[in-house]
Image 1 (cartoon, rainbow, N blue to C red):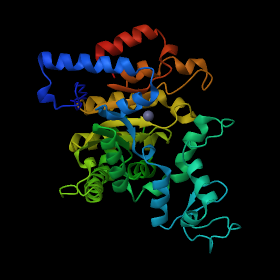
Image 2: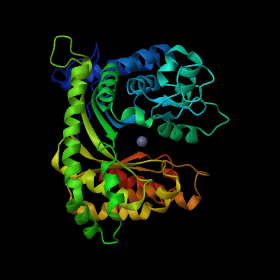
Image 3: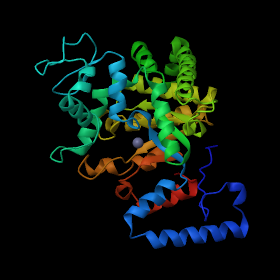
Length: 374
Ligand SMILES: [Zn+2]
């Protein structure tokens, strides 16, 4: 089952759940609710209240999106990357010699002595100072291609950052989406090609190296968690509060890739979740409005429906209706959530902001409530 989400609101300060029982808990909840009512119109006190609020579990967290651009610059600098001064896209070395302003491909470490370059990279890799004349959707999704190589060797550092911040935010549990195999399943899928018969396609993958990808991915996670624990000094007197945050993973499938690569990643997600309790399920990500995710949506649901029968215990969480009127034709807004639940077997829906554009939206929400879909 999904890990429990815990939220303890106890008056007179936050106390352990063991103390929260019966009348005492009820009185505490009343007094907390009264305090919240009293500060509703005071934004500063609301910030303090929300910062201290124990928040239970963060169930929708994209690991590459949880890391600040400043950290990615450090990761890239330690790996010797260069940066395109105009686009802020990371480029593999060799870089231009020197950090002079006329260089077009300086080492990214030049940014440490060049505030204009440093700030332009952060703005390009995040939503900071986003120029409202540009589409927020386009700017946001374009960031990943700019910084992505920076994270490859730094998953452990990223886990440490995410866990530390989660602890500071009073979270107890983190569920992180990440393509933890470093794209190996996608490469294998591309190599082996496509067969319309899902059974044959799965056999081809499992016999052609996907089992090895799964075991290598689990070993890599061992190393990444080891690095996280070392960085957080877990098990020592100086242990960071981040050590107390339980981290689990959803294998992240990139739904914008060609079908043979998406299928390989979905099979890997099921295999990982079946074999290793640190992987609690899988999720499909990438801009839902792009051509391939829209065009192949039906095919992706067929893949999930087929593989769910083989791996019925593996949890599925899906992005659906991360869309808006005008982003795609209206017909594209009518069915993604319902199909994700009924055919994709999703137990959770991510975003879902276009739910009222679905066919029979109230009936759909009733169905989600009955099925306990989050
Ligand atoms: Zn998301």
